[in-house]
Amino acid sequence: MLKIEGLHTHYGNIHALKGIDMEIDDGEIVSLIGSNGAGKSTTLNTIAGLIHASQGKITFRGKDITNVPAYKLVDQGMSLSPEGREVFAALTVQENLRLGAYSKKDKGAIDASFQRVYDLFPRLKERINQQAGTLSGGEQQMLAIGRALMSEPGLLLLDEPSLGLAPNIVQQIFGLITDINRQGTTILLIEQNANMALSVSNRAYVLETGRISMSGDAHELADDSRVKKAYLAM
Ligand SMILES: Nc1ncnc2c1ncn2[C@@H]1O[C@H](COP(=O)(O)OP(=O)(O)O)[C@@H](O)[C@H]1O
Ligand SMILES: [Mg+2]
Image (cartoon, rainbow, N blue to C red; front, side, top):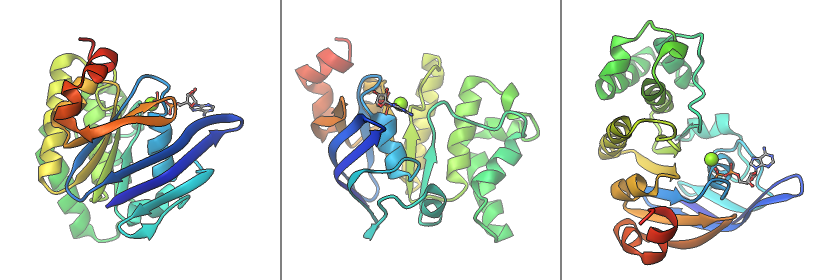
């Protein structure tokens, strides 16, 4: 579904991605783990068309999408839930969700997407008219994921959904990620929380200062002594 070949990204003279190769098949959950500053968000934002790639190729559903801007990728079936959630604080839950479906015209399709999101996240349904800025951190994370789902993406990109959340909320969010995947959405998950990420993923890549250092089956990586030492605090 998604193929990344020799991807490089720069911020001015900072060489953040130094030749990344990754592949995601239809129906998978794939995680990209790595320490703070490794280049995880840069990878996701380059795929999503928010940052310019300086070299390399990104193919999505057989089409070259390298440096195609984000708003066009939404129509092609790719959607991002950004790091730090970035919900619109002054808008209500429903208004935030509606923005995720901005490119859809058909009222029936939009209503069906609302229904799907409210079924997945009953807490959002209870808070339809509440301002997003007054939600808890976990609820804001649900809203960010829900908003990304409103465009009915085939590929959902999640940037650190566990960041800053209490362990029981993290459990809940990861359970929902699994549910979303079971409904047929392919997921690329970016996490510092390697333990949780590996536990829900089929495969994973480890990113170290702009390069992929390891990759493979998620459960095998979780058992790998180098991964344990560096990322699982064991
Ligand atoms: N807007 C930016 N301008 C300059 N450097 C940046 C910018 N965003 C990220 N970087 C740098 O790129 C590297 C990778 O950052 P990032 O992708 O955010 O890492 P991660 O998401 O893995 O924590 C870091 O060295 C970071 O300082
Ligand atoms: Mg990041």
